[in-house]
Length: 71
Image (cartoon, rainbow, N blue to C red):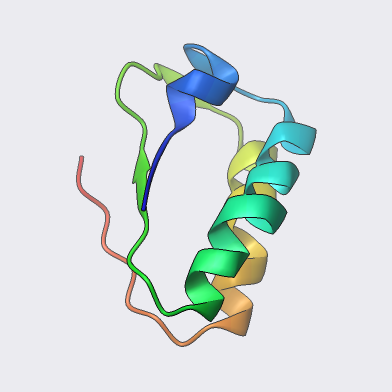
């Protein structure tokens, strides 16, 4: 599954409620099915720490996955 972050946040990802909703509705269900997830930050010029925390911290703690970051 690919999630295009820009589609949800525009060019600056700062709304942690949006991040939480993405985590609950898209990221966690995908991880439960053991599917690959691509978080595509193309065209996003910045993201707050609180956005990133709300998006992935719970998933990193709960699931034994290798996470790759491509910049």
